[in-house]
Image 1 (spheres, one colour):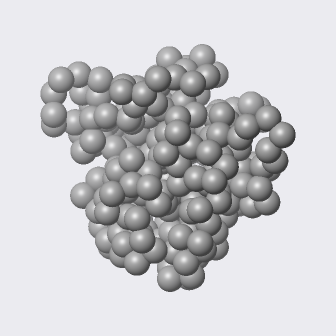
Image 2 (cartoon, one colour; image 1 turned 90 degrees about the vertical axis):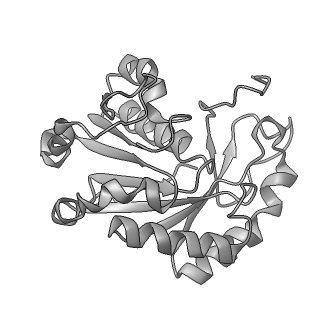
Length: 230
């Protein structure tokens, strides 16, 4: 099963709390679209958090002919990144399918607020990524409250939720199934559809089946303290 996006919306914004896995989801969606022959642009708008951002995967994206728009000074030791002027080009049709990796929390998505009119005119979908196993968003109430802050800061509205609950390389089928009630309750509180739940490609053991409503995704983003299980 693949996450189905609205074909009428060329721009997809991926938002969520720090560590929820939105960058990894952004990479999966972009690479999936490119594999289908689409022209793709990825925008790294995480100008707050210098770690685990789309800019770190420039080589991977460029190998698949995916254009990356990154903050000025991304990849350096300067801590004052700003959005580049070429950000305006995403509103041109020849930018293709656009995936925006938004910053975590309300502070990280504030930059989107300056683009909200252009995004509304162009048409967009904003996906809210949740992870039960991350601090400050471990209950449906916390996750719903955080979305409200993100929507206020960005001046945008989410269209759906992706449950990306995992524990890194320790993720098991049980890990995935235990997070389903959390995801369902968050969707209920926010009055948004639960688009799918994700399963890292290494999380299932031989003989285990992908549960209904789950999308298998490849894990590109890893933490420095983890041992790569693949």
